[in-house]
Length: 118
Image (cartoon, rainbow, N blue to C red; front, side, top):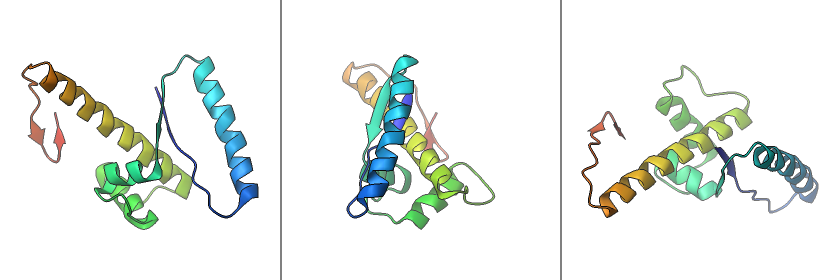
C-alpha cells in the first residue's frame, strides 16, 4: 500500500510544480508496483495524528515523536511529515476495519489498550 498527502500550495507556483512532478513520479512507481494508493488531505493527517485538524507543524512533529516513542523529533521535516501520513493511514485502516466488523454485526475482539486498539 502507498499512502500520500495531497498537495496544498497557496503561494509558490515554482515549488508546487517541482513537488507535483516528484509526486507524480512516486505515484507512477507505486501504480507500476501494483500498490493500492490512498491519499489524505493535510487536515486529515493532522486530525489523525494530533486529534486537531488545524494543528501546527510542531504539534504534529511532537505527536509523531510520542506515538512512535522516539527520543527526538524526526529530521528533516519531510521525514516527520511522511511518518505522520503513515500514522494517519494506519489509523484509517484500523478504524475502517473496526467499522466494517461492527456493520457486519461481528464481535471485533479488539481491546482499547494504551491509547490504541489491539
